[in-house]
Image (cartoon, helix red, strand yellow):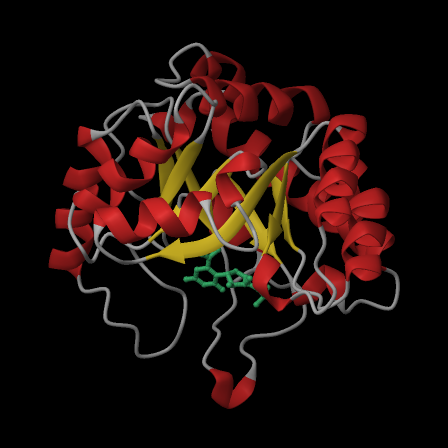
Length: 261
Ligand code: 6AU
């Protein structure tokens, strides 16, 4: 299965150019860390991209929480992504009919498909959400992660929802790069990736807000993550660069242990 295969081998089995690019970045930077850059100002977002950029394969945004969004911010993010060799993922969690998501993806303030290599998608509408997004990208190299299971307490992503969602994933290998989930997913192609949030070295949860955390080692070794998403563990650390280095080292060591066992 994918779990025992090195990322270098899996890169050759990618079913779309974005997945191949991501896997190659992971190998080149020895990083399976995605930072969740959940900050509300443009200056903080750029500062994070420039400082933790060298240690991540993916830089995840919630662009709609930035108070002073501008087209210049996007240019700066793209420049940082190029300089430090990471991909941008906008965690938009599209969840509407195909026609609506195609507009949300390409129009409005953020014009997400013009800059984000990847986006996240809830499969709850059915596969039209994927065909809708695909219809907006033209010849751009773009892809998505499908959120099949959530990290939060009391989530509604039941085992049957997860398995139906996996079917949608398998039907669109040209656009889907993988799944977001908490338990080892049975991806039919080793070129697909599992992205897992809810990762912290220090916390078990965030109180009544519902987030639930696991350790870097556990998400890679037990929960099947290829890439781990770390937000507050890095962003709110006293020294975010040092924290990013520590998460990167621990996550990569866990991956190396997994492929060698
Ligand atoms: O490390 P945290 O808790 O500060 O941040 C976790 C990040 C947030 C969430 O929007 C996101 O991961 N997330 C997702 C994603 C990536 O789609 C799914 C999920 O089930 N749980 C979750 O926390 O930016």
